[in-house]
Image 1: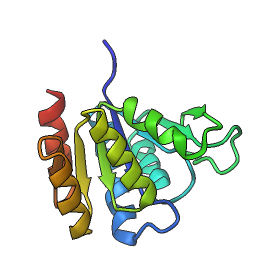
Image 2 (image 1 turned 135 degrees about the horizontal axis):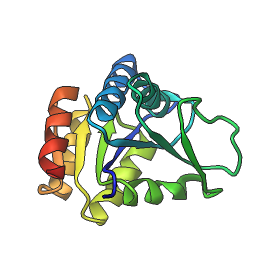
Image 3 (image 1 turned 90 degrees about the vertical axis):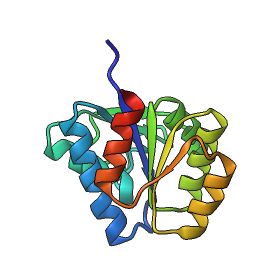
Length: 162
């Protein structure tokens, strides 16, 4: 049976301390649930924090990287997929995930959410950005799930994948 893959997408270098804390918790609980964590794979922001959290709980982590070598990769990535596609790799991120959790908000995260919605993927939005919540909920009310904390995000994932 194929393992469930949860994509955690979020801000890189401009991640807030709250984004990093949420990402670490998400990664840890994703691993505890026996799911596979997928991120953008870099040693930056939400990607690194989620991967570190998953590794702290013995989880399996995948990183879909924008480049063609391991420069800048998170040490917590078990399976590295080198795309040499830059931001175009965002489509691989979302298509390879069963559910996407957007942690924080930036241009790259917004592009991943939009690509996920175009593919009718379920997206859980864990962000303090009120404008983003309104915008994405309006685009796809059935596929956007807005949550206030990590526990609600994980509960929503459980409902979606059950």
